[in-house]
Length: 214
Image (cartoon, rainbow, N blue to C red; front, side, top):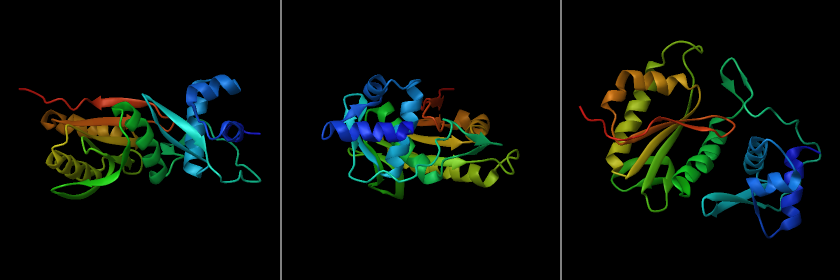
């Protein structure tokens, strides 16, 4: 039985109660902690679990969906081949929703902000936190991505128009894309935080969003 199946079975056994990643790790004696994080993430993506905030932690609950007869082999926490990630953009958005939501202590869902004709990926219910998730690679894995740079600039401009107290872009897959953008135009950036999120859920701040002063 895989770790994901063990966690799903445990969540069903304690239903309707739930458990945090830390509680699951202690109860099932799974280590390191990142393994549990990755597997609960997989269960969310598969629809075999759902979660909600409890203070500063996420609590996971069982769903009524059956466990597949043949579970796919578990992949490494951050399996990559020549810069390619094992997550799809939509899966990355779900991961970002959980991790960045925990970072801001807010529930983030797709939504719009009054006065801005754009549906953002990650918006808090009070619209105090607004952001978008981007899953980019460089041209043929090495070259500069001018089209993506233009899209990033457009999203920075749109986020500025929201006037949200906390706004951000979170990037996945290739860290060098946002890093190269910041190297060129980071001195003009104010009020928008840049993050890089690994497939294993590690969040790195590339730009804190604080206003730069000359």
